[in-house]
Image (tube, rainbow, N blue to C red; front, side, top):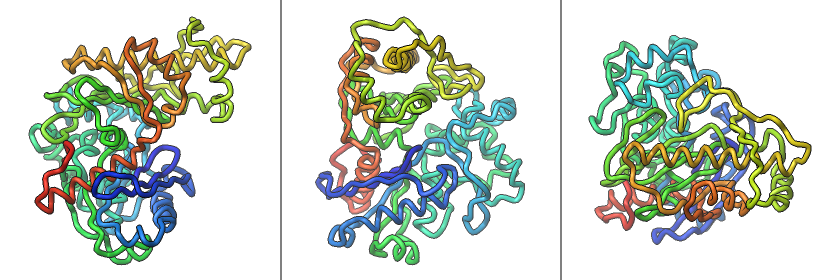
Length: 415
């Protein structure tokens, strides 16, 4: 199961890694309201053909990285979640005091800043969980667990295997989850939840991951590959032998390697501020990537950026707007491609291997004109993988976790 910004997607895979069923839906309500995550999952599970539903053995959830909520002792959400792009500048200095220098949690863009804001709003909160962690807790009927990938922004140090800096020593550290590696089996479906989903109560539940990491697992990158996730926002990921450290940069352990990268606030969400999907498709056919517009936009949906620069007050630049909608769209696409180029350059400057080609997943992977513009900006081959969904990556993670628990070595570099 994948929880994205604009909707939910479910993928069902067999033990060989072949896709057997896939479906998606919009959130039944606002993205920031956790009950809509449950309702969407119930809707998608009920649509799985019954013979396949009876064969489901294990489940994993991927969610937007950094989306955080507060909950009471029974797991009930206290208000809306704070989404991944809700920077909290007023907590920036406190984050720097708590987290070790250079850790992602030391930034106002990290989940620790949102944690401090939620703790301020709900002083009697019993716990703080990311989107995927909270839904995983609902599946299990208990909310003690978090996963290593999501918890990184909250302050988990995967090298030390503990909370960074002084975070674990705070009086409120009991609000933080017990951290498990993605793919680790946590238990079986809570019977009342299994009944709501129409799934066997024997289904196992693993620790989940972020949507960006699930997208990488879905395409199975080879050495020299970079992966760009073009959704509402844009994430850049690549495998690296060692973790990296830098502003807005995250290093997630995957097997014996590290999945390093960062996420920009720019992406398809900026385009949708001006055009619907059908108009984008129509206008894209009119563009000529051979003739740059020279507009040099900085296409951010609102003030603030996470990567390749970490600046919660960075202002967008979307002017001047030409009379031609096609030229305006091309300028936006060029601006997003320029951010991507700076992102790959930043990762290489921090010590990541050079990227020889870029694989693209997400909604933007369905736009061939955008691929051409990006290929020119990046100076390397760009290949679209429109059918490799983040839900497929979560399903692969679940399968690897079950195989490892049964004493079978995963066939891919899993948890």
